[in-house]
Length: 393
Image (cartoon, rainbow, N blue to C red; front, side):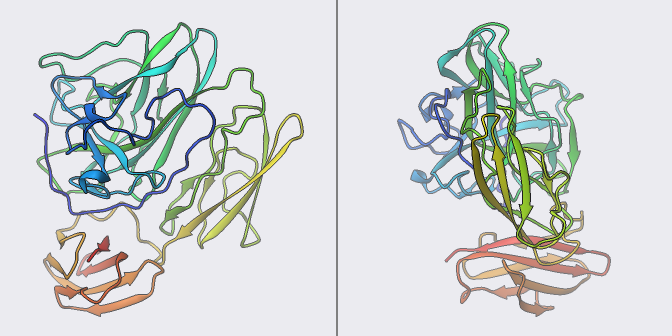
């Protein structure tokens, strides 16, 4: 059975939109034949559910569900209006069930022997307890379909993520190149591993009875990169947000044998694992703008920038402690309530880290606050709980 869970959390969103001809129709889920109301992916032109059993969520601002969805707060990947949500994993289901898959017929055949760059952006819903690594893109020559009580596709996709997707602040790029061994016409997206072999980690303890994983998905693309000629598919990405101690990946896959040089705006070390990688990991301790120069084999030079904003309190992580604190409603238009045992202090910060309120009261009036993102920090006698809050009047 499909699970509906009301989740009072939010995420920030930032991603980039690739250039040139994309072979995925309606790749950003912006075009629909009927304004969707949650479980109606078939309303997105060019997309449908892979299964009779489950109907993935389709979110669009036409229905006033974006960015305030039933699974949390998430803006569109690149400031558009629509995206989808997929259940990827249910630890309680040994039969690999409670999965969502979406399928699309590509606008052109992926031809045998040609090389393609396949990408998509995902962001984990912060209100579910599990993160998963095994999200993939499967290319097939026929449009198969799960019928009746069938709930999963267990196979090896051509494109498969290989690290745990825990980020709820940013849209994360899943990307790889693949050489087709036969002609392919269809793309399916989901988790193709068994329940046992799915690479998952419990991150929070919001819903102990529902050990599930849920992700937002946007900006799906497939490009022909056969030949490796210097192209305009690559960019550094758009603005990122992290907390102190966290890291974020920049850039994209190098498909044309270019070289890369990264420098930063702060001087000194770049806080990158490599200054010459097309997709370096960044771990700055202060807000940093990165400047990258891409040099093609034919000596054409392209330049780009990306800024990583670093939050204000050292030690605050997205992997919040599993302590019994409840902060609601979120989003809030007038008052925020805090519930929990042995609370010793409460602080509220703005997005730049300026402390706005310090109190022991378990009710905060935000009526006079500007619309936007804030951080609430709750100190108990054992730990510190931090949650992102949005104020929307």
